[in-house]
Image (tube, rainbow, N blue to C red):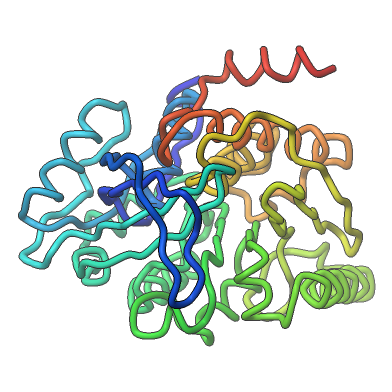
Length: 348
């Protein structure tokens, strides 16, 4: 399926230092690490490698440091078919994370390093973005890059379908990632918005409030489109994207056309939940935006997908995430398309 759809991912490529801990420590508490390993991670790399495993044509726009961590990240990328030609190298310390993984698969993550925070789009990056069919952006992307990307998409006659992952709470993003005002622009400009419970709470006041607000905005958009004959075309001022709120082991809520639907997560033996959300997003991109008839590159994006396809896409994405959770590290269990299809057929 490689080469059918061009996908550009903007996000970090990082090294994860993974600690298998007895428990996630409470404030002033402690934990014991029975095992310490390193692995390849970062939201951008996770989504890119997941799409690559599914057979998609994907290019990563990122930045690493000229140090051991940056060299290892590039070595990991070289072992995949991800196009890493737009991964630049700078003098800043490479972005890297400490991942505390508890026996039940839950985890806590602490990130450091300035390399991705200093990313800026050069002319080749900009050309790759406007030429793509689908562009994914994480909320950890520096605000200057996010704003430039939005301007590029808005100025393109046949824009790529835009996916925005809210990623984290406001306090984690300030001075590091996409600022609240820019997030608001993504809410209206993107074709697909993804947010976990923590991020939804930070920006909307909670998952329930997020569902109500997004659904109401979608209904208002549909009413306005029927009233003025615009057909619901995407515009930075008049609409909200399809949205998916992820709830970890409790599944996901999909919002489309003002309606919400809940989908349960698959029951698997969880070894490590790190990267599960990124794997899920990759599955959604594969099914809703990069699949045949998905409307990529038209500005219609996921609006072209019917109710049955919504359910099938959510189920496929949930399977990608579930399979990844059965192995250690953010990318350890990322499946091929054939593996996902076998997993789903066994559960029909």
